[in-house]
Length: 229
Picture 1 (cartoon, rainbow, N blue to C red):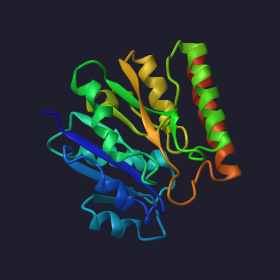
Picture 2: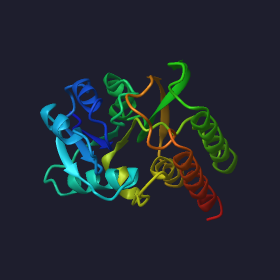
Picture 3: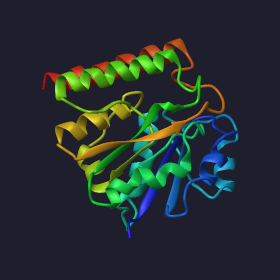
């Protein structure tokens, strides 16, 4: 039986976080919400919903994910699989079961929930998100012969493979860093099409011009860095 833990980075997701936690399948042994300096009731709502809540005051998606990983690393019993999902309720948490299945079956090390355009709610991804995903995955295909179609944040990975990546990105480049390192370390990976809906609240990245620009620069920076190594 595989032990599964979920890490949810969360910044001002008070209206959505309990929905996410409540719909995660019971096969998960622990749900870890990393409260990334929220100014709303994210912490209280996550705790009330039954999650372990950690505090990370350094702002950034990567900072929050690394905080969750550090917490897991200090536990005596390590999980077999780590799942990452956003706290905005744009994903369907119940689809965790199908995302982990290829790992449970021993077929792959790493699975990305791909936000298939035929399964996406209209307006759930901004034009800059759609273009950014296309550009990043096109470049990874060009430089590394990757088969990625998305940088989706809903993903699962074997815990030991995640540790071997030595993840370092603190902000917007977290997802692409993981995908690049999976390629470099020759991990077996696949994508599973997942549904995607409009998030609750406003995106902290794609919802602002500044966020979109910084995310784009960070993502392209990682790709070009690895292309010339």
